[in-house]
Amino acid sequence: MASSQAQAEITERRLRPLYDAIDNRQNKKALQIADKIIKKQEDLYCAKALKAIVCQRMGRQEEGNSLIDEVVKACPGDQATLQAATMYYRETGDGAEPKVVDLYTQAAEQYPGNQEILTHLFMAFVRVGNYHKQQQTALQLHKAFPDNGPYYCWRVMSIVMQAHKSTDGSLANSMFLPLAEKLMEKYVAEKKLDVEEEVKLYLMVLEKQGKPEKRLEVVQGPLGQYNTQHPTLSTAFRCGGLKHKFTKL
Image 1 (cartoon, rainbow, N blue to C red):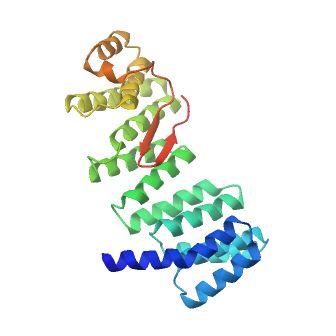
Image 2 (cartoon, one colour):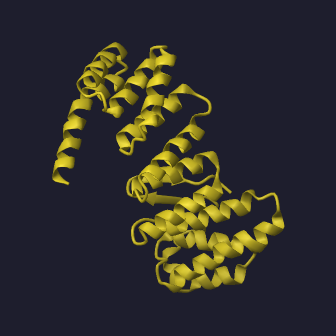
Image 3 (cartoon, one colour):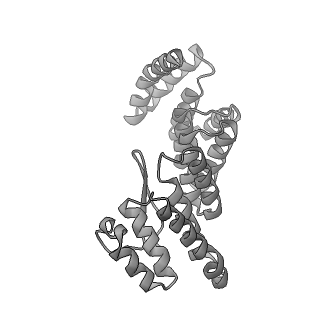
């Protein structure tokens, strides 16, 4: 463990000048630094992904694509490489987000149970509006890390979004929203619901089902202490420093 951490620190120091050159838009300098790093350590795929970004900025699209294809084929699992590849896709323009989904889907399959990868995969599904996959990924996260993170409520919110986007109103009212309510009631029964945003989510689920009496019970009950304002139709969730706001309903 200590040796792998030491290696990660060495790699970070080695890549720092390259990051700085890219941030400062010093493309020629960045390209020179990248080539030196890759020559010294050919399997440092983060350097290749960063070089791809530089190539794209210099109009060398074909070379950039070739480098990214090589990186993706290597199935990287470290965040530095995955984020560099993500940045490359987004800088190339249209169709980026589905490619990011594929990138993190592959990483999640290659490194099962990796919390950071699964979290980024969830957010990738959010960006493409794949609410069912969001739900499945949130469930994976909650099962693997039940006491770490808001993954249970991510799952519930994903179900609510499926109800909102469903073209079948009866399905939303007969399946999605009742399921969301049942999950929130279970969370309450287990005495785990103690965050304002989670209470707001519970109130939203009840509101969308037309249950004002039950909403009033929640507000006037023990959970009312966490409800400092009226629930909006936009709910934010957090995971460490990572934040994402779901699309407004």
